[in-house]
Image 1 (cartoon, helix red, strand yellow):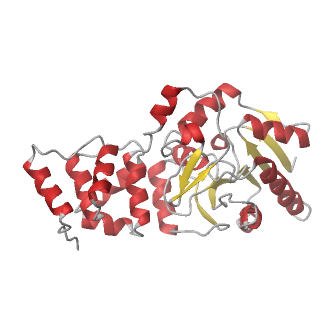
Image 2 (cartoon, rainbow, N blue to C red; image 1 turned 135 degrees about the horizontal axis):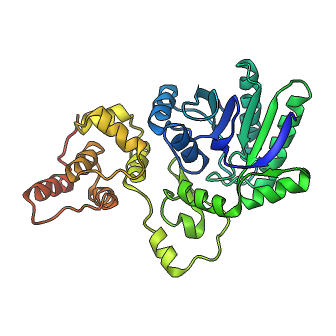
Image 3 (cartoon, one colour; image 1 turned 135 degrees about the vertical axis):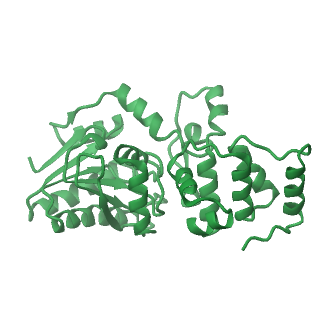
Length: 318
């Protein structure tokens, strides 16, 4: 069958090309992006992605698939949903079209797509499904290729079932819940309770979730990791990784570990060195250290010196 919709984990699909809804920056994000990096081998895939650099929305780039059951990973930069009148439809159409064209160019016989941009980018699932089916169907009228659209959550599965009678499911709700919790556990503050999601330094509020209790809300208010906080601050300053670890006098391999590991817990001096490298003010320094479960203490001479020079803005980094 040249076109089929299935409910499954896309990292378990065997195809020549696996499409990943990627971040414009060469980083490992959450959702599908996180799942793909973990399954492929985060360090290898991140190194390959960094060689490509920043991508624009609607663009598609190719890396090896490493540990996935595929030859290639296509990194498609989807649109963030604003109001439906800011080019979102054209950008998403471009993601599907360019991926299919790239698969044809590379001689792929099969390609697997997720329902792109419907996770952290909040694109409405029904509209995203219509675009996917339209672009893929038009492509298959002229070309031979096995195309899989891999849906994951129940809403996407049920929407697909309204259009296709034979949507196969290889994953149940329990497994979806476990994988979803793992893939989105690194979302910034309030993500689980309000579905507020951050990317490219911006915040977008998706549909409200229900059934969260007070304790869950409190716990989820502080779920931005040290890694997320650090790279948010780096992106806000438009700095390159090489600039940051050179300023902080850190080894490149150590910095790579921080970028690849969402759970990375730095030593206090490492966190302070990064704060100085970014020339953070006192509030930002306190925030970054808190994410690493550290604090500047008035009982430490080192901390007193750091605090003094940050407050006086006399820490000069070259």
